[in-house]
Image 1 (spheres, rainbow, N blue to C red):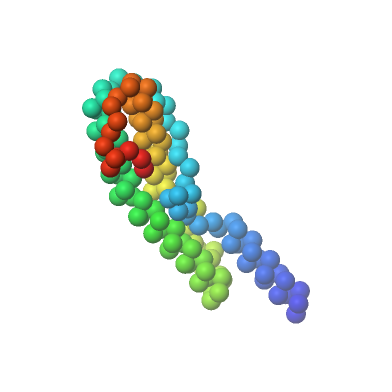
Image 2: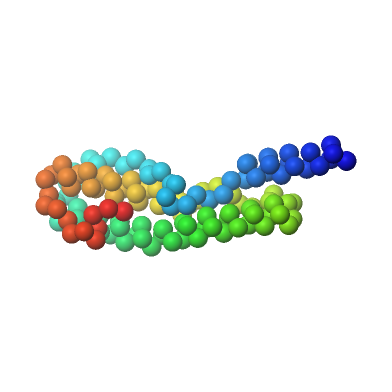
Amino acid sequence: MKEKLSIVFLALTTVSMLSGCASKSTNIPMTYVSPNEYASLSCSTLENEMRDISQRVATITGQVDKKASVDAWQMGVGLVLFWPVLFFLEGGDGALQSDYALLKGKYEAASKQYNRKGCPDMNTETSKI
């Protein structure tokens, strides 16, 4: 009987590690984007681009964090109540998280180019994402 419990525990542990949950926004590393992509833009155009990116990041941050919370909740319920359901969890980061990482990279690249050009300080609402 102890062997069977050990096997079930080992299987549950393996499934929980392999299935993975979606990452929270704070844990998603940015995708590198070259600042040279923004080299031809003027300071005002760069500022507008950074503002647009900030707004898009703000929009999807909640969605990314909600997905991570739902995945964590499903994992917890699956482990406690009905572990076979864990085989059907999607797991991992999807397209939304990839978009989020790319937007973070674009913002960083635009910001570097903005600073390289010696553009004046932006207002505080779009200074950091």
